[in-house]
Image 1 (cartoon, rainbow, N blue to C red):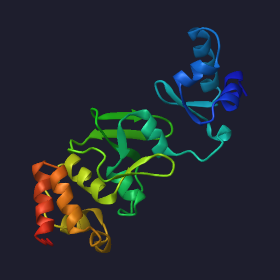
Image 2: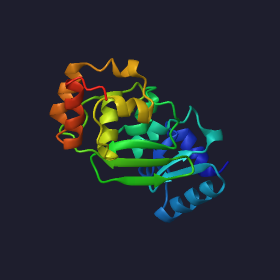
Image 3: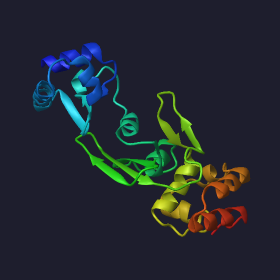
Image 4: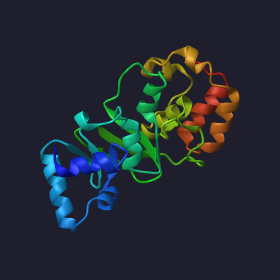
Length: 208
């Protein structure tokens, strides 16, 4: 094990850490820190998630690695949404190939050996409305919000629940749990026409 990996395990509690955290526990010049980091990465002990953000390799981790937690550290403010949130809540049967998040910033994609992390901007009026903080601190969209984000970002002109059931294979029993109050509240939060049309069709009871 390299000296840097020993220092990280000894002095940094989290398995995901920033360059700033490295600076606080590794003395010497920036060149020395970079040399130690480069050596640890070459040995496969440290993995770069993005520039300035790293994690311990699997064999050195002290807890199960959380891709959602990594996404929150990569780019923010953001919350898990779209396919990742829908899969998390059991609304769609497919596993997702990347971790998808909504962000206040511009669309970004970060590829690493761990996973691809994608971020898309969703201009809702209240960004974190319909988002819960999980026990581990991850910000997770509730399923209906994740669905509306999905409709917005993929430019779906959907009317009624039909396309959601047929196109995404979402169980109608899950959709039946969405209250009229939740539909109405989201009409206030999403001014975009395609979402407004979709929500109006739900309020009208359109089952196409």
